[in-house]
Figure 1 (cartoon, rainbow, N blue to C red):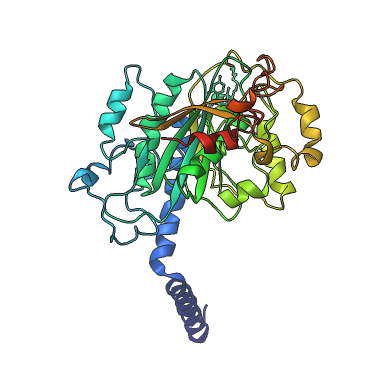
Figure 2: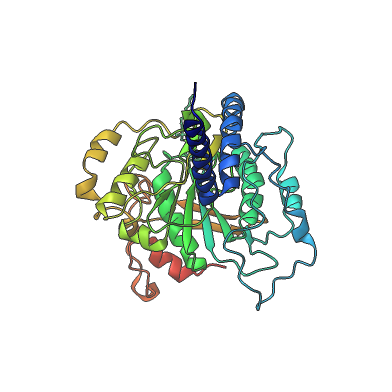
Length: 390
Ligand code: UDH
Ligand code: MN
C-alpha cells in the first residue's frame, strides 16, 4: 500500500520534472526545438532523394532565368543608386542544369537583354558591391561556351554583381596551355577595369547553385569543389582545378600561374602549391553549394597529357618566383567586344618562345628605325602598350 505522503511525493516529483522540461524548452526557444525534431524526420527523406537525383538541397532546382524577369522593366543604370543588399534577394539556391541540343547564341543573347557589349553587366536597380571578372581559357569548345554563357549570365545577375566575361582564345594549333592563358586573362582584364575579384573558369563547368557566390574571400578560393564527375566531392585535399577565385593582390602575391605547363595536367596542382608558398591558404564554399556539372567530353586534340608534369611539380618551390606573371610573354592578336563576352585571341607561342619558326629579323635600316624598332618582339606588354587597344 502506498502511503498518502509518498503519493504526494510522486506528484511533486512529476510536476517538478515537468517544470524543468518546460523551462528548458522555453530557454532554447520552444519553436526551434519543435522544428528541429520535425526536421529530423524530414532530413532522412531529403537525403534519400538527394542521392537519387544528385540535388543536395530540399529546395527544388529552379530554372536559372526564374527570378530575373522583374529586372527588365525600367532598366536604366543611374549614378546615385543605393548599394545592393549584402545578400541578393534574387538568389534561389539549386539550379536545374541540362544541355538542350538546339540552343543558339542568339537565343542566349535574347534571354539576357541587360548584358552590354563585351559581356558586361551591372545591376539595374542598385550599385553592385562587387566587381568580378570571369576568365575562361578556350580553344575549339564553342559548343561548351554557348552553354556556359547560357547559365553563367543569369547566375551572376542573380548575385547582383558588376561583372565581365573574358574568353581567352589560344591562337594556332600548338599544344594548349591553360595556365598561361589565365595569366593573359588576368593582365588583359585588369587593363580594362579595376576588378576586385577574378574567377578562373573552365569552359565546361556549369554551377548548379547560385549560393556559390562569385566574389572573392580573404584568401584564394577554390569554388568547383563538388563536380558531378568526381561524385560531388573533392577528388583530393589539395585539388585546385576547374574554377578558382583570386583578388588581384592574391594573384600577384603568388606571381600568377605558371607559363610552362603545356598539355593536360599538373598546372592546377602547381597553382595550389603556389598559394601556400606565397603564405596563403585555400578557402572553399560548402559541398552543398560548390556544385558543378561538367559537360561530358574527351581529351582534346592538341591537349595531350603532359608527361613532364610530376617532375615540374616537384620543383615548384624553386620555380614559382622565376616563372609566372612576371615572365608571361604573349601577343594579343585581336580583342573583340562581342554581345555576350569579350574575346581575346592571343599568341602564347611554344616552349621555344613566341615566334619559334620565324627566321631571325634582319637589322633595320638606320634611317627607318623608330623608337621601338630595335626591340626584340618578345615583350608583349610593351607591344600592347604601343598598339593601344580599341
Ligand atoms: N580547354 C579548351 N580547349 C582545349 C583544351 C582545354 O578550351 O582544347 C580549356 C577549357 O576551358 C577546359 C579547360 O581548358 O574546360 C580544361 O581542360 P579539360 O576540360 O580538357 O580538362 P579536364 O580535366 O579533362 O576536364 C579531363 C580529361 C577528359 C577525359 C575524360 C575521358 N572520359
Ligand atoms: Mn573538362
